[in-house]
Image (cartoon, rainbow, N blue to C red; front, side):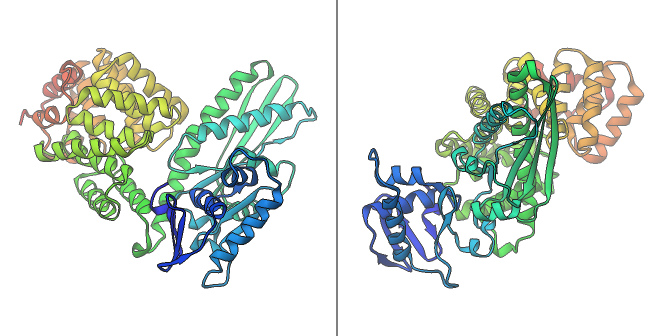
Amino acid sequence: MSDDLSRFGPFTFDPVRGTLLRDGKSVPLGQRAAALLQALIAAGGAPVDKSTLMERAWPGTVVEEGNLTVQIAALRKALGSGSDGHEWIATVQRIGYRLLLPTQAGGPADGLLTPSLVVLPFQNLSNDPEQDYFADGVVEDIITALSRFRSFAVIAGNSSFAYKGHSLDVRQLANELGVRYVLEGSLRRAGSRLRIAAQLVDGATGAHLWAQNFDGAVEDVFEFQDRITENVASIVGPQIEAAEIRRSRLKRPGGITVYEIQLRAQATRNFTGTEKENAEALALLAEALELEPENPLVLAQMAWALSQKDSLGRQATAQGDREASVELARRALERAGGDPVAMAYCGYALLHGREYDLAMATFQQAAEANPNNLMVVSAAGVGHLHCGDVTEALAMFRRADRLSPRDQLAHVTLTGIAHAHMILDDYAEAFAQASRSLPFNPNYPPTYWMLIAASAHLGRMDQARHHLEAYLKLVPEASLARIRSGQPAKDPTRIKSILDGLRLAGLPER
């Protein structure tokens, strides 16, 4: 448990010693009360079911539920009440208890250190009660897949299934569970066809953030279930991230957390930024690092942002930045604890820092940890593009494109596919994929590299010069030397056809 989670309101809890301080003064706690408090704090404001709490307080022992009630009452008495009179522990009907963080008294979902999500049992709209089993299986698989994401917490299935068969307003339910987001859905069977409808809802406002239908045949039920799980998991993550970025922008600068600073930095830079935007992101990350110098995701994002300064050909290579980026990435990996997003950011930094073997191992481990995170999958594709198997790079990029073709990183995915086809000397397909990429982000330099080089190799020199003109407006200082120096060089042939095409079109050497 991190130090941040052991502080709430006026309290500081030491999970190792089991001691509690309120405004610096000791609060007496029994051993079982301390174990319960530790479990509630670790949940970060989300509900903890009774069976989990009893196991924590009475490990390996069968006890009556009344014992838990007595211990919770004692813990409530020890904590007292907040400045506004509210209790610190709330009862969650049919489930258990949760800790009310300071801002949760007025709005439970806003007090969480990171966003949280509950996946409700899907409604069976068919006349066939047997479909209940399929619907429950889909939900359980979705919960398992979403639990791989470290950027938000997912309420355990034994808690969310306690609401099966109950009709509740989404906002009331979110308030009761202390979550920001609710994923709900329904299943309908018509003859040999099945339809699953899923939607992501903002728990505070009831607004729908995303909705989609999935159709399949009854005889393909297991394949259909896997497809739903894969698609929902790959889409819900970016939707929550986008909503969290919007939420962070509404807060006063003086009141934002390190988590929210990270979101702002990511929104500023997010693979698309100009030199100015990258500098803004680095300043925000430096602020976050000052507050939490051992935060692995901040370290990883800082490493990545430094590595990006020259990788897009906007700036000349700065050896000091490259070395600092690698050092930050190594520090982040030591603290990442298997976080796939942190590892993906580190992989980029190590790749551009010429630590090729470590970069590839990091990318592959990240992709294995969460194969439904589009940023992680795209990052693994980039790794294979420069240091691994080009066919595997194409497979990674195509998976990302198939799972979420309109994702905010679509330009990275499509430009990666174009780059792979440049390596394979398939210039027509490279041009086609780069053309698809351009509308998603017309400020991403590598897309222009593919458009210019592919056109030149195809003998379409007017087209190549047209795109070169647009590129030089975007990056006036561009040169072959800058692009070459910013790209990984384990295998120089991976960038050769691009440089040759850019040279044919007239990009200066220096």
